[in-house]
Amino acid sequence: MIEMKLATEKDILLIKETFKDQSIQVDSDFYMVVKDGEKVLGYATVILPSNEFAVIKELYIHSNERGIGFGDGLLRSTFNVVDLRGIRWVLVEGKAELEGFLKHEELALLDKTNIPEELAVALNKWEGNLEEYQYYFCEPKEFFSRKCKGIQKMRRL
Image (tube, rainbow, N blue to C red; front, side):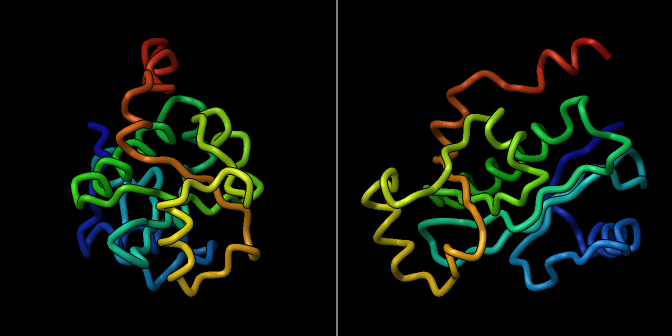
């Protein structure tokens, strides 16, 4: 059975063992995991710089498991945890391999011309470097008002 959930300490150890060839963001506030039984298929790492926004530092699905909706499910489950904590905005660190996926999910590329004022105020307090990476952003409530992108892929299975 496929699970997408907030990772336990045991899950975090499994993530680190499964993806030991990757440099996993260690100083995360929480991890999300995609599992099939005890097999880890993917994970996300999240930091909470403030009570106004979260940053998904990593969103990764094992290469053998891509293209069947797990990325969409992981993104949605991560946004759900953030939303349940009352956080309004989510930034996603847009590494090159994620760019197409994030655009497909209709997240907006963060640039100086499109930052909502409330998010701009919160980001001004953050010590993170917005110039180091491209970031995509959204409001989870707005994101959830759209149709699930992975639904068609999952129906074909």
